[in-house]
Image 1 (tube, helix red, strand yellow):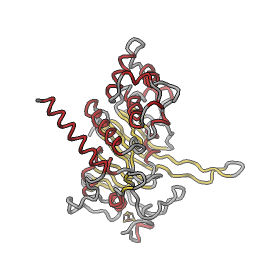
Image 2 (cartoon, rainbow, N blue to C red):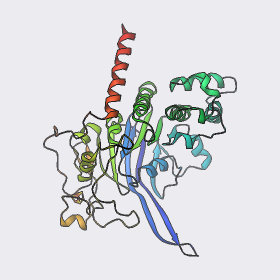
Image 3 (cartoon, rainbow, N blue to C red):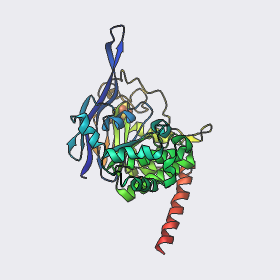
Image 4 (cartoon, helix red, strand yellow):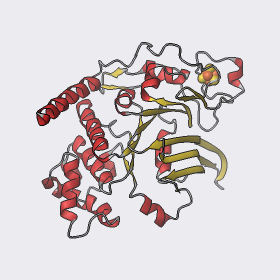
Length: 357
Ligand code: SF4
């Protein structure tokens, strides 16, 4: 696999200051020694409970948060040592979509102004071609030219996220970090946005780093999945392998716990038994050992390194090759999102058949 993005040893520790002199009394170990690669046109999902470091990882990739250590190479260019001006240029290739499209769009700017900024800044459009380029990117995202004159508050949540995607797509990046892009949306709208992201990937070949706690969405969209626990990757595998036969006890707990419909919100929430320890003082040995149902003495003192088992990388002393890849699939298709995605996929197939005929 030739990597578009290569991340090695990425670390972000936030200092904790106390007292009048604001002395550093510790570090929140948000992300520690994270390594992965993303190929052109694929989707690497990063999953885990809230506070596991997945969003910090996503933002550190674009240096919206400065890494404490590690290497990030985009098409061979080392990003961590680039000047701010060169980093701004690199953002033509790397963009981000946020969870809250409303919060990430300037309420005083029309959609045209929101999109014009990156188009002109990165030289994708000239004043003469700007109108056509704005219309083109809106069209790609399922919006019309007349939407360009509207303000963010005039859109529904789903439409606002389409504007957020259009803004990210304006410079035709090769990689987009999608930070929980559908978590704030209703299930039916989630399915439309997930399908839109997939269509855009097929059309434009863009790669995604897809950050999510929702395993139903991840299962649908991901090529590969990296599972994070307390700032570290504990398992990484092709999506099909990971969901069919997860090797790490934490991944197994995550999958077994999801989907759990939340009647109040109508959304699936993953929850693993027990509370995650503080990232200020992670447990010694394997950080998962206080919650692990199969922990042994060695787990309390010796941290397991990531090692390869088949196509999987896993950090667990007891992980063994799965003998039965046809394990029961706890994430069955009978969730509101899965049903909605199936309806949309069938409609798309019918449309394609009609076009072909
Ligand atoms: Fe559980 Fe030990 Fe594996 Fe950690 S190393 S996941 S504690 S069995």
